[in-house]
Length: 448
Image 1 (cartoon, rainbow, N blue to C red):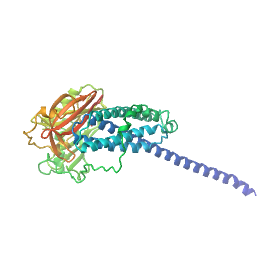
Image 2 (image 1 turned 180 degrees about the horizontal axis):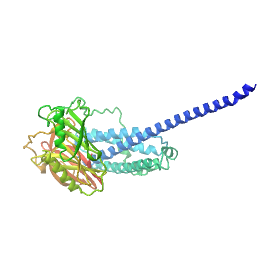
Image 3 (image 1 turned 45 degrees about the vertical axis):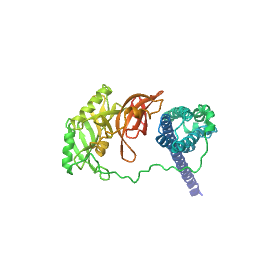
Image 4 (image 1 turned 135 degrees about the vertical axis):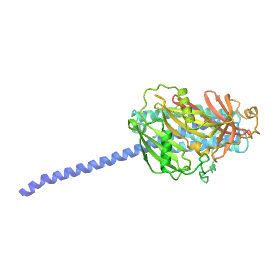
């Protein structure tokens, strides 16, 4: 009996420990489920933002398209992006009848863009009413993007959680994204339902990477590639060059190196096996107070390109991230901007140091072109522009296509109200080939 009495506390203790362990395991399991659920919600939400932003971009492009063939292509992309946005919206853990209006808007964009694309495919141009409807849809899409971005910011800051959105959807998500929707009530008669949609887009999986046009010469050894690194970084103090795994399954096979510099800085650099061309280089360091303007950095970027033997480059667009200005340069031949021959240069805005270089586009595509002379006049090309586009600049450019061909175009930069665009008109046929939306942000100028 005495033994049993002594064993009882031990048994109770074991039971308590066992229960505690099981409780902890269940707690951790629930926490893991919560984290997994949170990550999935975040992923779906950011995908939604991405596709709604694409909807806004394609709606903006569709407003100024004057070619029925290019308009049909833009509207087809719009239909696809709106459908994908609907899919990710449906995955969010927000139960509210108000959200039905947002889903309805995306559905209307999808159906209407499909309807207009069918019209274009028949060779018919959009009329004033069509453009007016697209304008109204674009206005709401802009509002929707702004609201989603604000919600994203609140989620990132922790001032809002998915639990809040699920339990108080009417006060947060649903009302916010639906508040502007009433202005579209007059459009509903224009929307129709379609079945049997088949997207027969231009798939290009069969197109393989051809040999890089801008790479020539004999294959070099690893030591010769290291010598190229030393020449390229002649202004920097190299402590050691460490060889990394080679790049093989790419359009430009390369030697990869990690270069250790003074002050404990490292630089990644790749040199092509054929011809010993520098494909990219990159160095990350803390940036001090910005002392240089965009024009100063641009001049330093051009000087650097001239120094390494790359000439006739024109700055196009740029982005400032954390004090580093990344500038895109395109090759210019006979006053024609050759956009496929693209080089990126990263300039530190504290002291002007060149921190990065990337020449993949240039090396893959650079050759001297036979630029056609028998082309339509600039005035004839202008006749094919949307009448609402206020032209700010114009010139000739060669642009790439998704089929890895090139087209000589007139490039017109202009505005419709407060939105800025680049419109490309085929210099041989007068057909509208592409439209890009220009986004001027505090950190730089980008196109989509």
